[in-house]
Length: 332
Image (cartoon, rainbow, N blue to C red; front, side):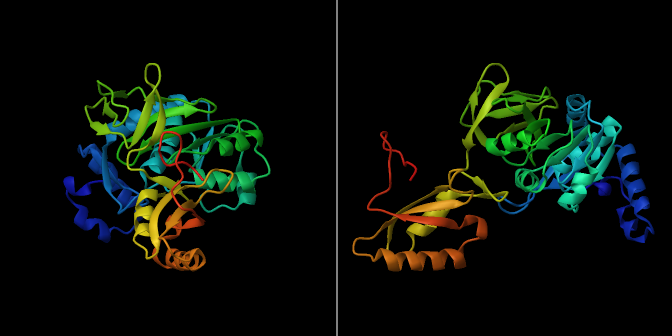
């Protein structure tokens, strides 16, 4: 959303005969001093939120990205350009680099394979990278990638690079912050973008960052600090995990399972990579409950009551929740 109301004249938009006239309204608003652009979050972690950014802040990030990817000769995107990540990479970055942009969001694997060329920068999110890894037999020489919106599994990046992808850059950020930090495979630490720095004293459990403009925000993740402005992610503060590109909350699912008749206790976590990419649950039945009947009842309830991404795909039963040497809940 381009805040055209701040410049006035937005009432005439529906009278315009061409899309180009709308672009002229946007350009006129920018020239008159309208400074903000508002994006809507995707809604994968709840109701979509409106997140405003100044045009100067977006230009600052674009300048950094332009230097980071100065050797790229074209941007090929499989991301929606109306969200912050897509807007930066599919709209602003190609202009900054002076290169063409290819919208590949609706292309088939065969079409993408024909389109790709040396010097391309492919931009998308983890689930779509997984689709590309399964669908493309190989990569042309000197095609690099960018991934954001969620942590990308290391095994996926390794597989892409083994198939011929020349480099992968991970961008850490959110709809609220835009880009905050980057890392280049196989680096394990993120590096803050130069227009951000940590607020001192740094809290690893609730780290705050401040933008060059003075904007101050709390990161959604816990971190482990390394030297200087380097850090590693140590899990989301809200306990969310990504399933199919959607934020889900295992503790909330476990709480709902505990409410079911015949369930004394429950724990839910994401599967290990060798098990799959969905949730799994450990169930402690009530004394005297029939495990077979309880299993059938729980699967029926899960399918009817929970969103697809929230549904545990495997149920394990036992007399008590598994714990490690320190008494914390362990994997099973």
